[in-house]
Every structure is written in structure tokens, then in C-alpha cells.
Image (cartoon, rainbow, N blue to C red; front, side):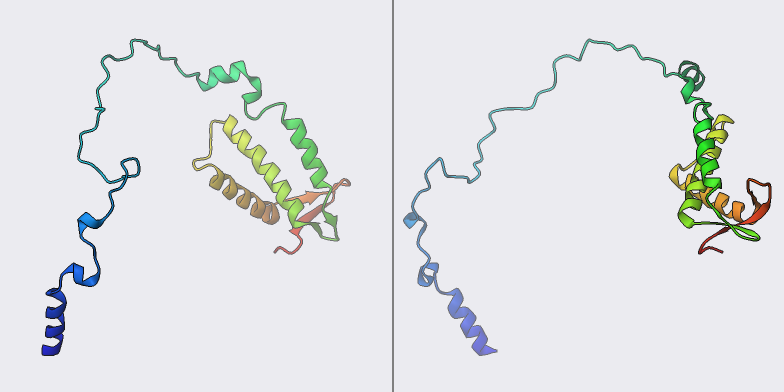
Length: 174
């Protein structure tokens, strides 16, 4: 321990010049335009509060009620009468897509998902027309699609053009 103490004492007793550090006077001055050191001078600009407030007064405009908006734009009414024929065509095309077997009408998964999506979308429009809206948006519409998909497979039957009923099945599903 005494050897270490001697080494520390010898280092602390030496001056910076012994290690090759030049004195401050030997360092060349930095030209003023390159000097980026902070100075303690006061800033030339000060913050000030505005002298007067804006004198322009804006009259608040009442928002349009849902009933008034629907009267002006009938296409906003749900379920929209203009959408019904489009969805009917889509659904009738999708209803002809399953492969008809002896007891089952087998849908491809992507076609079945598309059909459930269209049914749930129209069902959401009908519920909105009755005054109900989703609480959480996309997650609620996804939950409705899941419920409808299960309900159609377990509680509904597919009717073909001749009127024959078959169980609904999805290829690769339950």
C-alpha cells in the first residue's frame, strides 16, 4: 500500500507543465468570428406580451343536427335506399358460389368471408337506421362479423335455385 501512496503523491505533486500542457498564454487566440464560447452578455431582444387582443369576434355557428343533415342529404340515411340494390346483387352472386354437395353447401373461405362482410356491413347500416351505432368502431364490427360467421354456419341453411336446403360449410373450417 505504501508503494501506491508514493506513486499517487508523485503524480499529484507534479505540475501540468511537467506533462506537456502549455500555459494559457501560449494558446493562440481564436478569431472572433470562430469563437463559439458562451458569453455572459445579456440578450439584445426581450420577450414582450402582446399589447392588445384581437378585436375580431367570431359568431359561433351551431352544428347541424343528424335529422337536418339527413333531410339535406338523403344518401346519408341508413340504410340507404341507393345501396340496397348494389348489396342485393353482390349477395345474390355470392349465394351462387358454394359447391353444392348432397347435404352441404361448401363455400371457399375467402368467398365466405366476403359474404359475411357484406351481410355485416348492411346489418350495421340497418342498426344505425334504428339508432344504434358501434361503441368501439372497427373492433365491434369485427366482433359482429365473427358472430354472423358462426351463426350462419350453425343456425342457417343455404337454399339453392330449386329450393333445396343444405347445411352451410366452409372448406377447411369446422
